[in-house]
Image 1: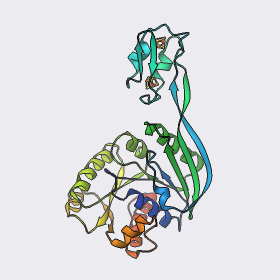
Image 2 (image 1 turned 120 degrees about the vertical axis):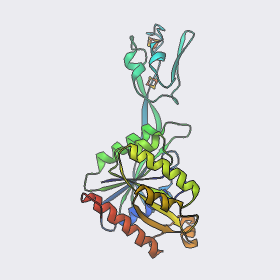
Image 3 (image 1 turned 90 degrees about the horizontal axis):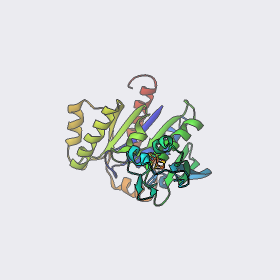
Image 4 (image 1 turned 30 degrees about the vertical axis):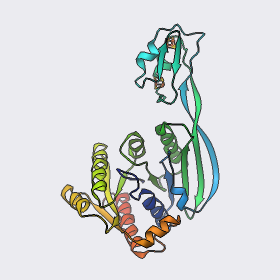
Length: 288
Ligand code: SF4
Ligand code: SF4
């Protein structure tokens, strides 16, 4: 079972839910939590962990071989991302724009653009309290999150079998990194906050999940602030609200100290139990 925890906007509690849920579920199940927010991973701040291994990750980009190039310009024509251009008697490649699609390299009639690895980030695997934790982090200056997310997901699939529940702490928003993170998930849990901003971005996230044909449900964080707009929207759209995590000063203090909340706040443990029952219900082929 692959469970993606996503949100239309940042700061709604994605990491709070991911880390608390991973620890809560790990009491009875084999769990691996993966932080896919590779531009700024922060799940690790809330988890006590011991490093198991670290791997440098690279992606493939074309490198120009001037000696065999005839300056025909075909590479520039086939690149959809303007990552390779012909400038006078030179071919220039912009690695930060390259999506590694191989088109220019494969279609160059003279093999003058061989693909070569370029470093993009680091993957680490750790043992956390009762579960495994995978984190990938882009190197400073790298702009392409999708290749590192794809490699991280492949790594998780390679190292953990179907008996392990895979939780993904996804990047915020609804753009390519999020699509890559949730496209293979069995269920998507959208976390939001009960404010007009939360509602606006939740509606975008719902649209994305529906377009991808995903089973999804909502968790409302900081329940008690804001208004009823999110609850009314979910009711109107027939969207299941799995849990409402209460807003409290205690929760804010625990968050600020980088601590898990459910061991200290029984109401949050109760809400996590509802999320857990939903996941178990989906694993058994239907809702709990
Ligand atoms: S397609 Fe190949 S041969 Fe043609 S300009 Fe590009 S690199 Fe040179
Ligand atoms: S590999 Fe694809 S994205 Fe990268 S430069 Fe070539 S055509 Fe453009």
